[in-house]
Length: 382
Image (cartoon, rainbow, N blue to C red; front, side, top):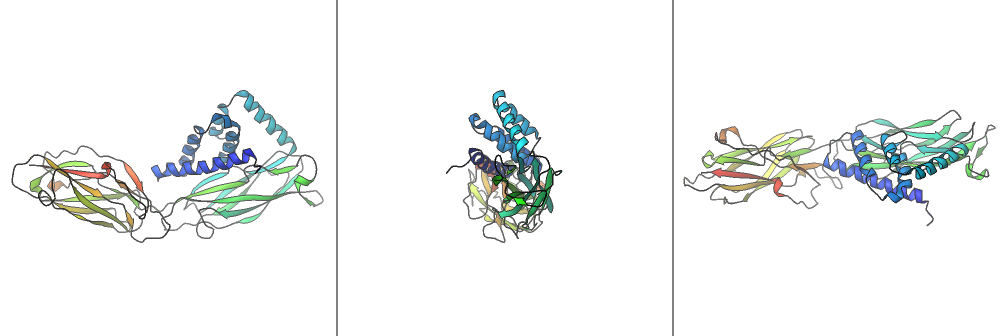
């Protein structure tokens, strides 16, 4: 259809912006909302063809609000002719039409924020104008009643008003959820005359005295604050002597300890063979709510024979949220590494350094690919 190219570009930009934020948060689940939004803004600067600069400037202005350093950086990317054209168009519109819009049009909040305000701005137009506009929330991936309290109402901008605030309450719970979002819409713009008549600004004649400026929709992203934690061994490689008999390997949990979580594990042969050099083992480590460490015990066979150095692996599997809930992702991760108990460590124990790579794994029904970095290697010295 005949869709305004600026509106189309803005909606594409909005979706891309949300997806960018999700990608950044997957890499850093504990990033602060302000820093998350800032990183997403800078990421967006470097995307997209420069030929679409005009619409990208407009979209980003509204997403991040007026006066932001990112907006100024974006404006510098365009030549003087394009910038002059934008300024001329904005000046003409400001003098003749009162614009109502969200400023900014994107909000990122933690689930435990409680109540926060969405700002609706007013700019330009004839003097002495009173403007009214309706607002209402709409579900996205977040649902009214379970994730946020729905709101609807009418804002009245008197001639001296430059902005209004809409208060929204976010519902905090103890359930693991994906980062979710919902929308807040502006609609039914009208003007009120001095004698109390309510008129449609588009039907008064000539240039509209008021208009809903893009964006007429704000997006609110809710960041889940219920973290099951990051699980893993302390180091990825160490050496032991076979006469130690067994190892109690500590599995650590940090960056959150919410809920009961099961971590499968198994031993895997390397040059060392299960049953001959060590005891094959497969099982599960169970972390109760708020539990931060657990142990895996592995037996080591003392053959009392000279052998070259041999090694085997222990693999942590995909974390399982013990109380499985349909449609909800647990934000769990496997972190490579292992620690060696002091009573089993010879004086020559060589810990070659920890690998701090973290892979964020989805919930139990999705496939998992475990890289070699997610293995722990045991080398026995004879």
